[in-house]
Image (cartoon, rainbow, N blue to C red; front, side, top):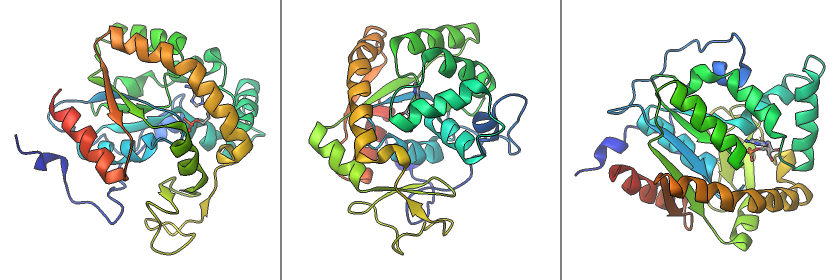
Length: 262
Ligand code: AMP
């Protein structure tokens, strides 16, 4: 089968900024102002697994533009809350941000409460790419129940794999747009103008939790939780392992081939 259907027109960094994530980032009664983009063929409901720095966010951006699905990152919810100022935050969110600052996982209960406030996004006709959730088997079990309750099925769980030394090198060179959150890499995906986002001109920054001391804690947290989570989805015949070696476009091509097989 031709796979051209996964290549709509893109800008220089391979993404089109068309997704409205208001409901996801703000939760509660907030709704997306723009309707979801019509999904490609069917609503794709995909979970992305992989250590921090493996490139899930970059793949999610590409996949969501091609598939019409929305990029739902739990880390982005915390970062958005932090950006909006901590004075108006609930005590649970303030404590969650403390965990994040140290590079530790936020307690399951807090994350799950946040997800329950955003059930509409999991049920959205546009589909979703979950990035950073679930992170533990307890979270995966709750997600499974929530989806079953809404008669929604996961299409696949993509597990991006990369050796530890390469992950650490990737995180060290990663820069994120402080405005639109697009991710660059100083070596493999540099912006056209140093320090500035190609898409919106925003300043590129090193994320607070990408600092070396936080990265070590994050990697330890990931490794402790990853294996049971991988086994959980293996048992459900949803797991697809994808090598995260090479450039974002090479990884994307592997991902696309796996999608065509679903
Ligand atoms: P990420 O951008 O996915 O790497 O997330 C950044 C940080 O947010 C993590 O290091 C955790 O502190 C927190 N976080 C995001 N998602 C979760 C989750 N599903 N469970 C626990 N903590 C999370």
